[in-house]
Length: 477
Image (cartoon, rainbow, N blue to C red):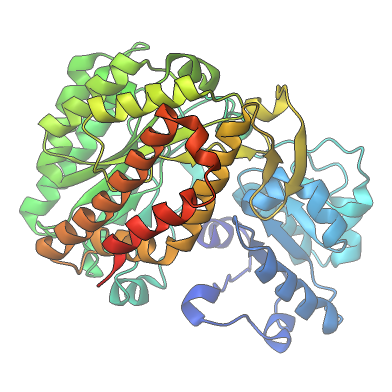
């Protein structure tokens, strides 16, 4: 974003401030010297946003305050009630932010910006009125600039995760629980291959060894492009421009492994082998369910059999797996719970370190919310999700119990995950962390299986206590 605005504006310099790295919020006097203040409103950032907004208001700062990212995109009207002097960028932020910067370069202040952006389809302001129809912006993928990684040295020293973007959108684009179709209706868009290679070279030269691609669908509908990237990385490793020990992680659809929808299985296999040779060690696969009816409700591009086949093929390549799984949705039944547990056992995921017991998050901007056939609760702006009731009261009781238990152990599980995703941890440390977390997950799944077989036991007053006591045996030093 910073490099994009600087590349296409006349005079603007963009300074970056990362509160997580600085371990503080910027002071009002620091903000006052800028002509435009932009805030990335990611999930869980509402308290941070409130602090920055209050600082700007306390200093009587009339400079434009721009909110972007997820909260601004999906809840701009709700956010506008909390922050009545802010501008909200909806969708990709690069081009709308650039338009605002150009207005400011031409001498316009915040009050003048309100009228200048009234007809802008991607920018909302409370004074524009609730009736204004704002649509998500979509940046021309070919105009993107190399991201500025001014904090990469600090991140590397902290062994923090280094992220890189290889594409936007999704080639399937139909999952009912996913918000991507609403902001990327045209599907998958790949970023320039040479740009990706140059970013990996830069990350490697900083000393980082394990970048994570943020793409929702890394292969998209072009596995041959993925092959070209992998071969280039292998060549750059051979030439010494990329650390030969650098490893990679990215997200795949089942169709990225098995083929389908005009993608040949043979091309997928070649791409996976090339990436394995280039340093790919782990992939995320959004399996989500092993129940036929549930898979249909989720509108996944897969089946139970295909999910099993994708897991098996990834394992045959020697890849570690990070599994996405939505065990419960509002219509879940005990029968579907049993089907999911049987699938997990068939896929040999009983001791898998990923949490497989998540309930669905009903997020704004998804098909499942638009077509929800139950009673939606209030919107939690900070998570962009609605509360909802489960149709089966026993399922509701089980889900509530699992949420409480996982919250109780959240610090411990996050510590284990940090170890096996760290570039600093050795193989023994990673193995031990995965082993401990796998034992934890197995106890949770076994407990679920007992409840599915004897549902009345969920109402036992000591059921949750018994589960916590079993899990504590794993978490003790």
